[in-house]
Length: 234
Ligand code: NDP
Image 1 (cartoon, rainbow, N blue to C red):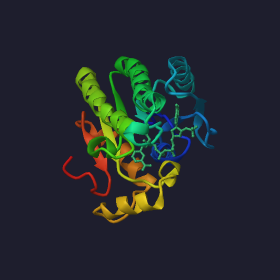
Image 2 (image 1 turned 90 degrees about the vertical axis):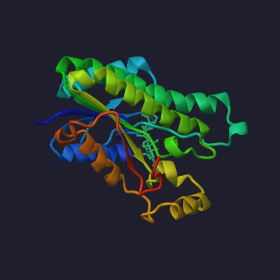
Image 3 (image 1 turned 180 degrees about the vertical axis):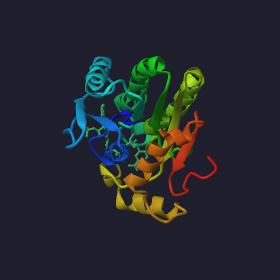
Image 4 (image 1 turned 30 degrees about the vertical axis):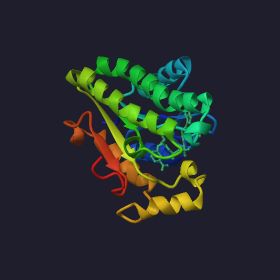
């Protein structure tokens, strides 16, 4: 049966690939758009995930369009990379606000409906950087590892109601986010990836779709790396 799926940041990059994967599987999919435009073929809601009122309004609109959210993918994220001593309070706070607080807000709002449904899937898009650390990404890495503690706590709170909370941790994927990295940095990453190539957005999407499927019903609190092996053992 078609489920009501909500992907934040689903208007481009990895989020759009995730939204497309669910749609291809026959689900009804809503996505947010924020600074950009709504993508064709999806129910688009304009929403800044760091704003509680906008998050509430998005969930109301989605519920009216396709029913209460049964699968949430907290994917929206930003970077503001710079070395520690140059990192301003605003660089720190804005990345934490969007990536971590935004994910908390949408997950909390989604859980409300899922508890009523007595089922649900919450998937957080973290990053291998949250496990390994990364120079110039103190803010981003903190936001991404914070998601793991958050997901695992939710998994414990919500498990008895048939709700799973998991984390997908992508490695390096070619999107607008990584296109801004200097060629030299990209080369250095590439040299450390056992599979010898960057990931495709569809490869992240397939993992997300699977961990939100019936087949993955006994998996909760897990961190699933989709990273070509770069984060092995972490
Ligand atoms: P992009 O920069 O291509 O897309 C980011 C998405 O997040 C956009 O849809 C954007 O919406 C949305 N967004 C940003 N801020 C907000 C906000 N405040 N409210 C709502 N939506 C917002 O990134 P990617 O596709 O590369 O990354 C997607 C996720 O995957 C991120 O969480 C990222 O950290 C993670 N990731 C990416 C990796 C990579 O190599 N690319 C590796 C590991 C993790 P809009 O376009 O409207 O601004």
